[in-house]
Image (tube, rainbow, N blue to C red; front, top):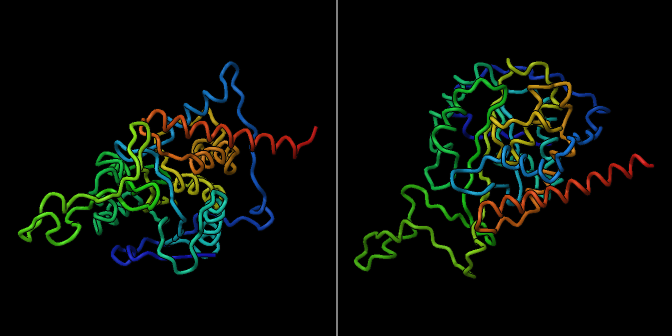
Length: 325
């Protein structure tokens, strides 16, 4: 059970605490939610997976899909204790199911969830207080100015902003230099001054290949703002699964997912979106099992889609075994 408060909260006016939704009874919260796959005549599952990956994935500009490398720490602001605890515990549970570590009490939040009213006004105040936290300025670390303005002003019930960075696939060393960051005093200039090489990332290349890259993309921070006035009766269980999906993967907030059984349809179809589905689980497992080291972007997405297909087949077989003949 983890509730962490980020230092960011100290620099912004607190929002009015509100109860987001009724907490779920323990008996209900412990139930695993599984939905049967949507079957579309003449449309193979492989084709559906490819389309889903293309629609849903929202990487940083000119980068591949990012994921968490080792683990996450979930923090919640402006929610009552019972709802906040459930939110943190459920997202941490989903993360552990993907092989990630979940932070202990007092950890520095890497996924920060804020509940508020007047979410656009609050988000603009929050981003203005520390703009460099949201847009660090390094190459390939966010989705750009247009997406950032959408994050600040959208009227969606839940909005999110992810910060990622290209990193060495083996060591996790960041491969994007931040503004003003240098390697050391006068590394490239014999006279003691700074030269161009001092401002560039330094990575050790172990192999050279046109087909593979030593750089992958890792998530660094995800900020989620929940507009409690627009929740439309969604339960805390539904909200937790929705936030798990959009904070453990880079998800396009404008993706059309109406043809899929996914928690991403929560605010368009609350009754038909009780929680994470087999489709969602397969997507997350595929993302976290892919090696991500193919240079060609199309091949890289194909690799993720293939992993999703394998995860989908395993989940489907397990469900059939549970249901029996």
